[in-house]
Image (cartoon, rainbow, N blue to C red; front, side, top):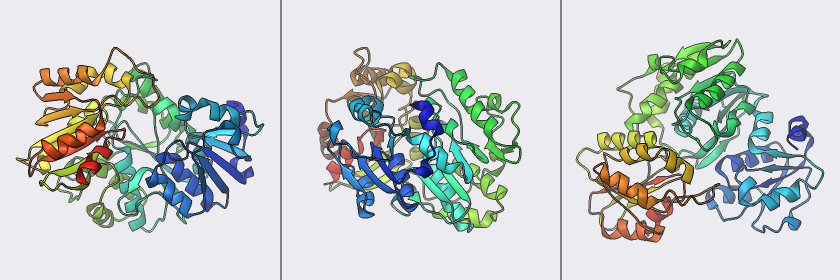
Length: 436
């Protein structure tokens, strides 16, 4: 089936059914396919209004029925990788139909590689950087097509239908997905040890980034920090021109978002300069950038005066960096964290780093581990992580439900406190419930 997928040209399909349509990336791809004149439908296992309602509004039929035999007839099936383990029986049925089944990244690569492709990669900061870049290219009159792994605050959308030759995409390193892309400009924000349920170690991760960098043509550009010891090894022997984004870093750059995003802005400014966009125009767009869904997103203030924010940080370095930046932006405020550990494997393999990541928080409350694509591992738990965080000097405790985190926000946080619901799962729902 994989070989079939690689040979199949998505242009030949008129009726496309998407399995796992509610995902933040694949739902944007659905909108792109509709914009291309395709008839698109989808299957999902839960109601995700942020991604599904915009699709329904443009005529896409969405089914929550998981009976494999009720899967609609289609010329081609696309699927979210999560459904390889979540509901394999649905995907198995699609594969008996005698038509191609392409993964999200296979399909997106087929489309995006026909454009002047700008791929934003890195262990951390991809989503914010991608959204920033879209704003700057718009301001520069380049009108890109774009897919971002969140909802832009500016448009409340994860997709932009452009009219120019440029395509901006968030390039995910997990399972080497980003190797489906052949970018003309590749931005490498950073490289770090993550996704160790798939990669063997940092060297293995670097090998994937190196393979991607080698795909950038001689007339293309790799924008990165070439002095970063984790990035430097991936640059050897590449054909593209290397651009050092640290030369564009402006410590005084005015931003509405957290100060930590000045480093993301540096990469955007480097790309803008490469594409001939005036620096003043780019900086004005960055100063007006208002963020994305789930990236230190202000959710509201409770009746007691507790400021509730939500952030997607789920890796120790992301947590540590985000909390330091919050402390910088809100000096003297008590910062409380409600954290949703993401994946048993990540929590277990990076336990020491997680335990040390919450130093700028006054206290931490942990939800049960969000399993996502994994089976439970009895050797790791939120209770174990709470003990380790406490032993590192930050009071932490684990609870058994999101409802108890909602109660914590409503009853234990005080006026003027900042509560950040943090993680890649659905921890944001606890903050939203407290605001109701």
